[in-house]
Amino acid sequence: MTITVLIDNVLPPNSHYLVAEHGLSFYIETENKKLLCDTGASGNFITNAKAMAIDIARCDFTFISHGHNDHCGGVSHFLKTITQQKVYMHNDIPCEQYYSSRREEKKNISCDNVIFKEHESRIKFINGTQQIDENIFAIQCNEDKFSKPYGNCFLTKSNGKKEILDDFKHELSLAFVTPKGLVIISPCSHNGVLNIIEECRKATGCRKIHAFIGGFHFIESEKCIAETEKFSKYILTHFPDTLFYTGHCTCDTSKDILSRRLKNITFFKTGTVIRI
Ligand SMILES: [Fe+2]
Ligand SMILES: [Fe+2]
Image (cartoon, rainbow, N blue to C red; front, side, top):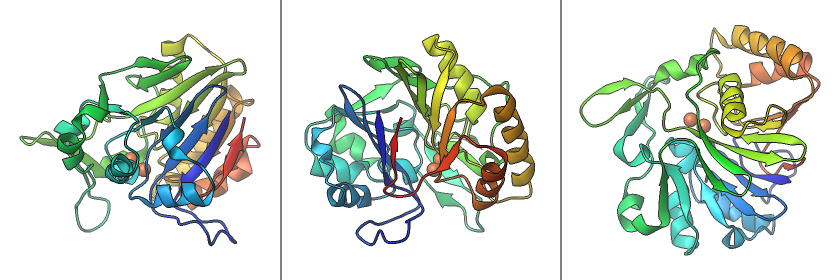
């Protein structure tokens, strides 16, 4: 299985032919499927795919992990450029607006609702955990045994009547059942990496986690050191053999701690190719 990071916040040195942005998009190839997971914040992921000689028109489908525009901002560009494939996403996304109050000014970080009118027939809505292809599951996380990222406290959602703290029911992860164990792709992990792992285990019946790939949503804050240390400790004792790959919303302070505490962690950037 190969996962190529089409776009991430960080551009590695000497990658002038690629662009970075605050967003995430993966191109995934399994033995018999090709798919996209998320589309970054704009059409830049399409430009990067071309630069890396990846033909996204040949994908079987596209999967959107949640309703934040750093993950679904590129969907409208994608639907206009590529005219065939279906796009999977949670069915709460067209009914909700999402906001971030992390910076001084409150920002609307929702997906562009025009896509639901213009490309209605191409969007397939998912209402909870379901198998979407052979050995590929979309997982909605209802597990809350472990703490969720501190950064969630700046994020709200509104159904037009009432604005509440986001509970991230609109977030879906991908779980691939492979001979080596589960491979989990969770681009922003708002439900918490450990909760998502437990939910994927329950939903698929597969206990062994071969790899976990995605942002951990550990943002620069006064809580970041404590939450990363606690997480690292748990990983050391419970998942010493699982391969972790992170970037996007895992902040530099967290990356520094994770790199010192864990051996089984790799940091991805725009253009990284992960072979597992
Ligand atoms: Fe997010
Ligand atoms: Fe994100």
